[in-house]
Length: 102
Image (cartoon, rainbow, N blue to C red; front, side, top):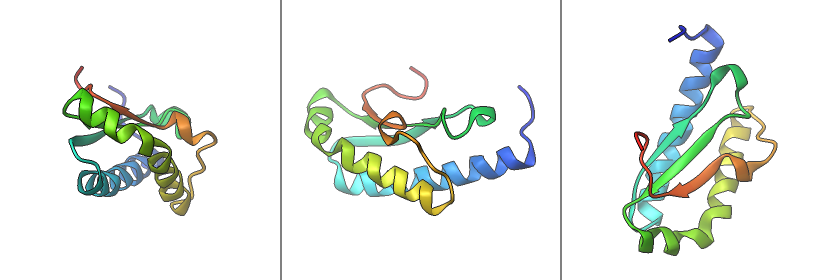
Protein backbone atom coordinates (compact mmCIF):
# COMPACT_ATOMS: atom_id res chain seq x y z
CA UNK A 1 0.00 0.00 0.00
CA UNK A 2 1.28 3.41 -0.96
CA UNK A 3 2.09 5.80 1.86
CA UNK A 4 -0.30 8.75 2.25
CA UNK A 5 0.95 12.25 1.53
CA UNK A 6 0.59 15.08 4.05
CA UNK A 7 -2.53 16.34 2.27
CA UNK A 8 -4.05 12.87 2.22
CA UNK A 9 -3.36 12.45 5.94
CA UNK A 10 -5.26 15.71 6.57
CA UNK A 11 -8.11 14.45 4.39
CA UNK A 12 -8.18 11.18 6.32
CA UNK A 13 -8.36 13.02 9.66
CA UNK A 14 -11.15 15.25 8.36
CA UNK A 15 -13.21 12.27 7.12
CA UNK A 16 -12.58 10.28 10.30
CA UNK A 17 -13.64 13.20 12.50
CA UNK A 18 -16.81 13.78 10.49
CA UNK A 19 -17.66 10.06 10.43
CA UNK A 20 -17.23 9.78 14.19
CA UNK A 21 -19.55 12.74 14.84
CA UNK A 22 -22.22 11.41 12.47
CA UNK A 23 -21.91 7.92 13.97
CA UNK A 24 -22.49 9.32 17.45
CA UNK A 25 -25.58 11.21 16.27
CA UNK A 26 -26.81 8.22 14.27
CA UNK A 27 -26.59 5.81 17.18
CA UNK A 28 -28.59 8.24 19.30
CA UNK A 29 -31.28 8.94 16.68
CA UNK A 30 -31.53 5.76 14.58
CA UNK A 31 -32.66 2.60 16.41
CA UNK A 32 -30.75 -0.48 15.28
CA UNK A 33 -27.73 1.38 13.88
CA UNK A 34 -24.56 -0.55 14.62
CA UNK A 35 -21.76 1.57 13.22
CA UNK A 36 -20.65 4.08 10.64
CA UNK A 37 -17.78 3.17 8.35
CA UNK A 38 -16.33 4.77 5.27
CA UNK A 39 -14.40 4.01 2.13
CA UNK A 40 -12.40 6.55 0.16
CA UNK A 41 -9.63 6.71 -2.41
CA UNK A 42 -7.66 9.72 -1.26
CA UNK A 43 -6.15 10.45 -4.68
CA UNK A 44 -9.74 10.96 -5.93
CA UNK A 45 -11.09 12.73 -2.84
CA UNK A 46 -13.86 13.87 -2.32
CA UNK A 47 -15.65 12.21 -5.26
CA UNK A 48 -14.89 8.68 -3.96
CA UNK A 49 -16.02 9.25 -0.38
CA UNK A 50 -18.67 6.76 0.71
CA UNK A 51 -20.01 6.78 4.27
CA UNK A 52 -22.08 3.75 5.27
CA UNK A 53 -24.44 3.48 8.22
CA UNK A 54 -24.66 -0.21 9.10
CA UNK A 55 -27.88 -1.54 10.64
CA UNK A 56 -28.43 -4.73 12.60
CA UNK A 57 -31.42 -6.05 10.61
CA UNK A 58 -33.79 -5.41 7.72
CA UNK A 59 -36.50 -3.92 9.97
CA UNK A 60 -34.16 -1.30 11.44
CA UNK A 61 -32.89 -0.47 7.94
CA UNK A 62 -36.44 -0.10 6.58
CA UNK A 63 -37.44 2.10 9.53
CA UNK A 64 -34.44 4.41 8.97
CA UNK A 65 -34.79 4.66 5.18
CA UNK A 66 -37.16 7.70 5.24
CA UNK A 67 -34.44 9.67 7.09
CA UNK A 68 -31.70 8.93 4.53
CA UNK A 69 -31.92 12.32 2.80
CA UNK A 70 -31.67 14.12 6.16
CA UNK A 71 -28.43 12.25 6.93
CA UNK A 72 -27.04 12.90 3.46
CA UNK A 73 -27.65 16.60 4.04
CA UNK A 74 -25.93 16.40 7.43
CA UNK A 75 -22.86 14.81 5.86
CA UNK A 76 -22.79 17.42 3.11
CA UNK A 77 -23.14 20.24 5.64
CA UNK A 78 -20.46 18.82 7.92
CA UNK A 79 -18.02 18.46 5.04
CA UNK A 80 -18.85 21.95 3.77
CA UNK A 81 -17.98 23.39 7.19
CA UNK A 82 -14.56 21.76 6.77
CA UNK A 83 -14.15 23.27 3.30
CA UNK A 84 -15.04 20.16 1.26
CA UNK A 85 -17.81 20.40 -1.32
CA UNK A 86 -19.69 17.20 -2.18
CA UNK A 87 -21.21 17.76 -5.62
CA UNK A 88 -23.94 15.11 -5.26
CA UNK A 89 -24.63 14.38 -1.59
CA UNK A 90 -26.79 11.34 -2.47
CA UNK A 91 -23.71 9.44 -3.68
CA UNK A 92 -21.75 9.81 -0.46
CA UNK A 93 -23.92 8.28 2.27
CA UNK A 94 -25.91 5.03 2.25
CA UNK A 95 -27.75 2.87 4.76
CA UNK A 96 -26.77 -0.81 4.59
CA UNK A 97 -26.73 -4.15 6.37
CA UNK A 98 -23.18 -4.86 5.17
CA UNK A 99 -20.12 -4.26 7.32
CA UNK A 100 -16.75 -2.94 6.20
CA UNK A 101 -15.43 -6.48 5.67
CA UNK A 102 -18.39 -7.79 3.65
